[in-house]
Length: 66
Image (cartoon, rainbow, N blue to C red; front, side, top):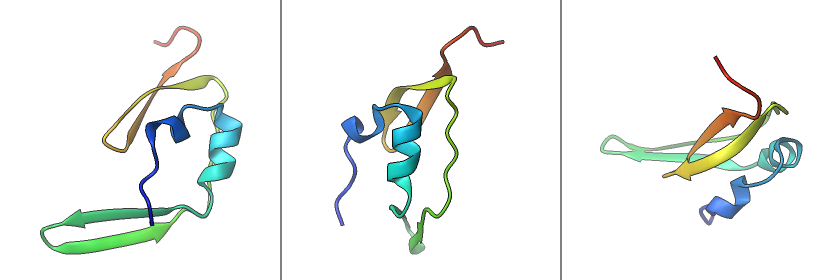
């Protein structure tokens, strides 16, 4: 299983939501490893990917946000 690249996340929300289905999330800690499969996604068309930091996707509104 390979880690997804930053470029994977830098796409429109509809495509990204569709392609995340079936991906496996893995978390390792001192207590061991846990994982799960993404079985449902939701796209927010008014958001875009701003950056990905260590697996965390940060999004911002395309229009003004309060």
